[in-house]
Length: 96
Image (tube, rainbow, N blue to C red; front, top):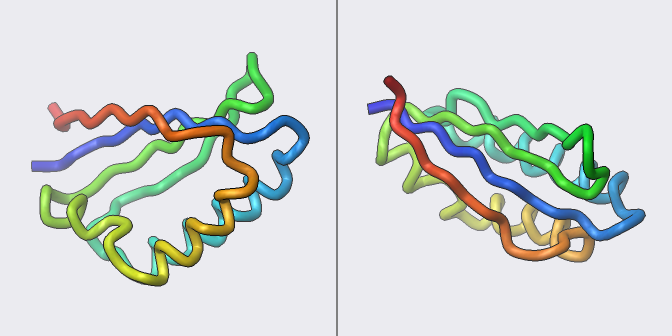
């Protein structure tokens, strides 16, 4: 079953460029290592400059379980740490 994810992320005030650059590195790692990830896209809110949404889609539960479970992802994700404004809010959904 195809799974969709929407994650709401916050970046620290004035660190948008660093946050976006860090996420682009993360996207590259996902693209190279997760064939079961259909898309992994970052969007910025039009109403709050520090709020971002990640829209993700995975082929199945196995592909979702692999997401973020390997060292290259953790290393790329660490780049976002200094620019992040807290833990993400995550919503998982099933494709209809």
